[in-house]
Length: 307
Image (cartoon, rainbow, N blue to C red; front, side):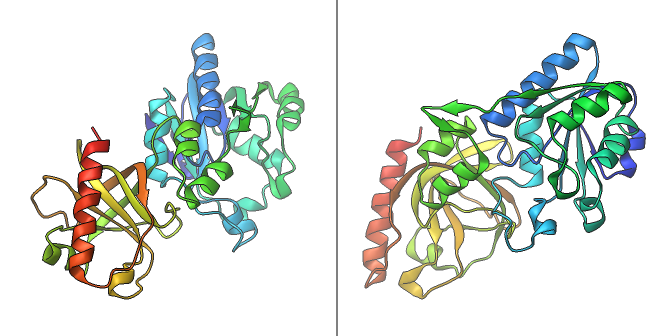
């Protein structure tokens, strides 16, 4: 999948296309349904399928302080979109100036002039342009004049609940992994870079990889989890802590993972931590020995759960 970044990069695009637009945080099953339809529509027409997204949540610019924590980094989002079969991804910077573009501006500058859209596919509740005034109706009416068609893909429901990024965030914040796995169609992953920690894990016999994550990224609710860690192309079973290390004094909320049966220096490496099951609440222990005993039990439970 080719990735174009910025408005100016649209000049590198050639040929007519089928375009879909959205923030697509988490790339959940609802988003995947939109991508599937865009890819199929492009194949039917012999065109390129293009997804347009943004480098930050629009509310970060439009109403600072109200923006949600995000489910994916831009890089993880791009990887997930690529897996849907989309040919090209356009990442636009959502700046203050961009937020003032009208829906008409966006259509003319991005869809028509930039991507030569012959067809647009969007989620039924997607809005765009200044004050979110653009929607599927806007695309259809402008398209009649500009020479492209448009269609909306309906919302996805599972077990009577609507799939949405906000519902996934709410469940993860409570430490619930079941709905996110169902709605995402995969297990939730947190990406970050391994940094040097206090070194306590090594002293306790369980050296952990301390993850520095993007500040805008959502972390699951405090607790101890079983899962896996992705290092390059390899996966390792991992016992995971999301918390503040209360036994040693309160620290900033962070993720650390103990990779079972792994030896080597992980500092500076990119790690993707995949959450499989929540084992227990984070707890404060009276002695390091009591903590070590509990970690040992967590590790064995993780080994039994993750295959």
